[in-house]
Length: 406
Image (cartoon, rainbow, N blue to C red; front, side):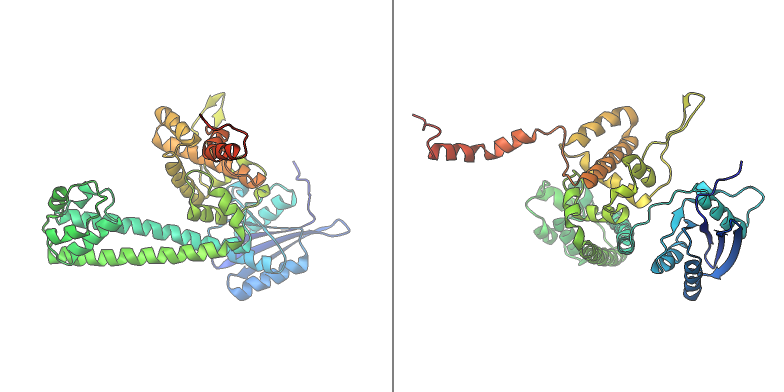
């Protein structure tokens, strides 16, 4: 079967770390089709040469595979000369077996693009792509922080200090002050001065938990860990400030997302830089969920439903959605009841994925319609009446619409 051409001028790019192979298929006014192949390096001057060559051909469509992070620099170079190329999923453009070469890959991409058989992946605008660097590095820092906190807890336990038994958070304000006092070598009765009165544990329990055998090596490691923890926390705070400053023009979208149970300001900001605010790009909530990789798999053969495992997608968004789902499952919202029902039948992990999927679909419709979150389990009219009834009754009495009680 011959492929029907929908575009007359297309370019396919096979991008690697050190080399970019380009193939242009151009149909002239006389109907004659010519194929032009070029190879470029991966340095800045080479990317500029690629962009100028592509601009001279005036293509209707430029496509490239999403090869790791190597596609980002050529994409930016083409964008700078006014060419917005399409980045396609490598799984969707597998070459014909036996013809696997760089030139063959580029020509196959151009052939498929000419026939209109490729669908572009979502690539956010340049400003959001830059903010993605900040948001994703912040996620890495949060992981490092959790690792260091766990290590500090283990070193305390190794030294016989059982503070984690009587305190819910070893890194809370009061507990951290006590740990710093232990590192400084103060005895247990002096460390108790830093214990907050809000702690549920009694003074006797705290005193017993602080009794340990911290050696000089324990204190050295604990001091280094505490210093590193506070350094990472300060760094995360700087990342937060830079991220929010970059999203200064998206205050309305940030406010909308924060009405969803489980989403705070930083979570909303990190989600926005990944999916953007224009939901028309995805066309439907199903496509957005598929792009993220959080929707159930569609795998059926001979009338039998097979594995419905989620596939790879945007791991950064999926991690955020799982965090939102954990937080929302502990709130008095529709997500809590849904989570409890799913946990019984499907287990904790599948329930979290399902709640994350539900939150993402909700966010899609909120950003599309520019509406706040509406919980179907909450009677908002009753809440409004309960909040305002005393003021209304007082006003009605003052103006004579209600008689004073005898």
